[in-house]
Image 1 (spheres, rainbow, N blue to C red):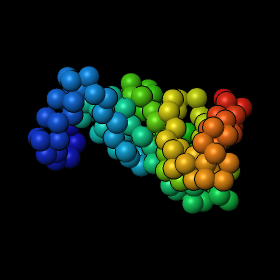
Image 2 (cartoon, rainbow, N blue to C red):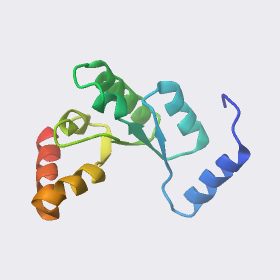
Image 3 (cartoon, rainbow, N blue to C red):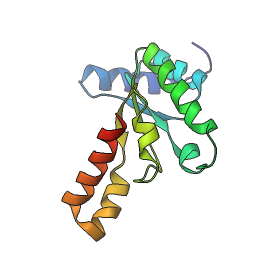
Image 4 (cartoon, rainbow, N blue to C red):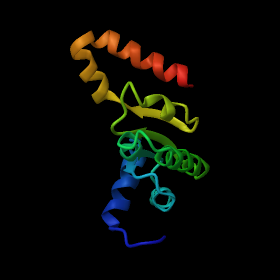
Length: 132
């Protein structure tokens, strides 16, 4: 296993897994970091989508997310994604087949202030479903 890891971290992941609690490590879309998450025994990762969300005119961050999701799935990890995803930018990430969960609660709650929770969820669900 590469790098130095606090044994308490490995123990915590093992105990949570043994207790039926899914551990998901929130990480940048970096292949080496994904490999490390798999080595640590985490069953899932959440890819940080902040670079993508903050770079709307660049295709590079989205391609990094695609490659990271493919790599993670090949390593046997469940793939989640989130941070900065909105009604405007969620569809390209939702279209990544390997991503099985999106963490988009903040944008839904924010939108619900103006349209109500039911409509905010319906709008987001429609966007995600149409991207799939």
